[in-house]
Amino acid sequence: MTHATHPDVHIPGTYIFDGKAAMKGYALNKMCYSFNDKQNREEFLKDEDAYCAKYGLNDEQRAAIKARNVLGLIHAGGCIYYLAKFAGIFGLGVQDVGAQQTGMTVEEFKKKIRAQGD
Amino acid sequence: MARIVGGLTTSHIPSIGNAIPKEAQLREDPYWKPFFAAYPPARDWVQRMKPDVAIVIYNDHGLNFFLDKMPTFSIGAAPEYRNADEGWGIPTIPPFKGDPDFSWHLIESVVEDEFDVTSCQEMLVDHGFSVPMALFWPNYSYENVRTIPVCINTVQHPLPSPLRCYKFGQAIGRAIESYPKDINVVVLGTGGLSHQLDGERAGFINKKFDLLCMEKIVNEPETLARYSIPELVELSGAQGAEFILWLTMRGALGDKVKKVHSNYYVAISNTATAMMVLEKAA
Image 1 (spheres, rainbow over the protein chains, first blue to last red):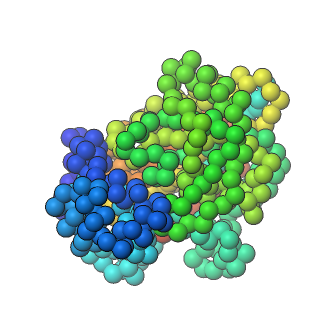
Image 2 (spheres, rainbow over the protein chains, first blue to last red):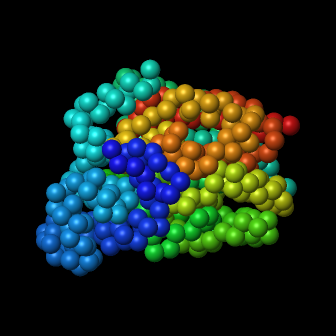
C-alpha cells in the first residue's frame, strides 16, 4: 500500500491530487480532458501514439496509457476525474476502474461495496 | 424580499443520469428500487413549495473547468446553462434557464461579504448539476424554474475547508434574503455521501459516518463544519469530500430547519447514496 502524498495526510491507498500532482500530471490530464469531445476520442483511437505525442506525455504517462493501468496513471500525476474520461473510451465505468485498482474482479468489487451497507 | 423555502441534497452519480430515462421500469428493480422510491415525496414537496429559483451548489468534474484555471468558488451569470458530452456516455438533457439579474445580486452580495468568487457568463454544467435537477424535477420538467449554478472546486487540492464552505453558504443565505423580489428560492447541495474512486482504497464506504452527517446536518451543522478536508477524506473517502457542498447548502438555510424527508442506500455504483429535504423553520 502506498500513502497519500499530501504533507499532512497519510491514508493508505489514497492519493491527494494537490498542486505537485497537478503539475506532474498536467499533460496527461489535459489529454484526458480533451476526451470530452467525440472527435478527440476517435482521433486517439485512430493513432494513439500520435495523440499522446501531441499532448507531450512523458514516458511514464505513455506507458501507463498503453497498459490501461489506472494506478500507473495516478502515479504519473493523473486525476481520477479526467482519467474516467480515458476509461470511458473503452466503455469502462468506475466499478471496472475500482476493480482494477484493488486487484478484484468486478463482481468481487461490487460485493465489497454492498457489504459496507450492512 | 426573496424567501428561502428550504434545501435539497442528493447524490449525483452519473449512472443515475443513465437510469433516469428508465425510472418507471427500474422502480421495481431490486438494485434501483431503494433509490428511486425516495424521490416521489421529495418531488411533491418541491411542487408544494413552488420555487421560482433553484440555487445549485455542486462540483464540476472536468467539463467546464480544467486545471489551467481552477476557481475555488464560481457562480454562473448566464441566461441559460447547457450540459454536454462528458466523455463516458451520460445522455445530454434539455438546457436550464438562468436568472442573470439574481446571479449578479448574488455575486455582488457575497463579494461584499468577503467571498471573492469567479463570475461565469458562460458555463457548462455537468452531472453534478444536471442529475439532481432531473431527479427533483421529473421528466425534465424544470422549464419553469430558473437556476443559478454555484460551483466549488473538489478536483484539485487544496479544497476550501468545510468551515469556509459553511460560511460561504451563510453568505449565500444573506444574499438571497436581501434580494428585493418576491420569489421563492430552494437551495440544492449535491454529491456524496461516502465514496472513493481512486487508489487501492477505491470502493471505501463509511455508513456510520454518513448517518452521523445526515443526523447532525439538521440541527448541529457547526459540529460537521469543524472537520478538516484531510479528516473528511479519511472518514468519507477521497470523493466523499463532496460533503462540503451539502454544508454550503446548509449554511444558506439559516439557524432553524426541520427534516421533511431523507433516504440512505448503499450503494449505487461506488457511492453511498443519500437524499434529504430540509425545510426552513420559523
